[in-house]
Length: 251
Image 1 (tube, rainbow, N blue to C red):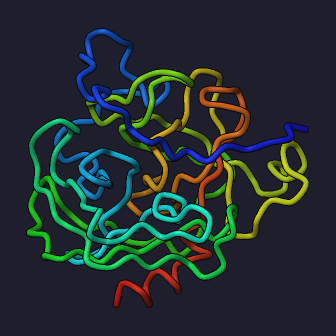
Image 2 (cartoon, rainbow, N blue to C red):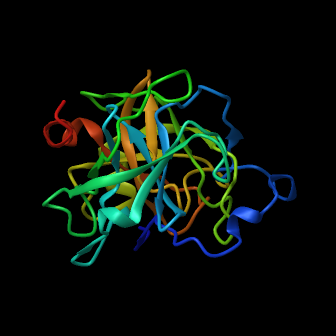
C-alpha cells in the first residue's frame, strides 16, 4: 500500500511561463494539446497574477476549484489576490481576466476530502464558443469509463508548467478497488482515476476538471507518490458535493 498522497497545488515561480512548449514533450503528464472550444469551462486560477490551479465555470458568475488552492492551514486567500483567466488555451496570453469577489471553502475541508471551493466573480462572464459553463454531474462515471482530465499543470514531477492547455484520458476506478489497493481510508467525497505510468495530473492541475459525457464529474485533488506514477489520481466527486456547490453558486 502506498503510504502517502500529495496535493496538486504548485506555487509558480518567476519565469516558469517563459518556457517554450517546443522545448518539452507537451503533456499534463503524458497529455495532448487541447483544441479551441474543447474545454470552454476550463479556467486558470491566478494568485497575484501567477497561475496556481485549474477550475471550471459553472455559471456566468461562479467557478469551482479545489479548497487547497485557496486555503492552507486556517488561512484562506483574500479574494482581492485572486482572478481567473478564461477563454484561452494559453496561460501566457489571450482570453479574459476576471477578479474574484468572494471565496467559499467547504466547511468540512481538513486537508483531504471535501476538497472544494466556490468562487464568485466580480464581473459576469460573457459566454461564447471559448467560454461556457459545464453541468454538474449527479452520478459518478461507471467503473472503467473513459474520463477526460485537463490543465496547465507541470509536465513531469519536477518539470515546468505547460503554457498550452493539455488533456489526457484516464479510467474511472471503483471505490472498492481504490480503497483496497491504495488507501486505508478513502474519503467519502473522493474517487480515483487510473492511468498508466507517465500520464495523469500533476502540480498546478489542482481544482481542474474531470469530465464524462459532457458533465463535470471530478475536481483534481491529489496524486499518489508523485506525478506520472502508475497509480490513481484522487479527484473530488462532484456527485457527492453537488448540493453544496449548487447552494453556494445559486444554481
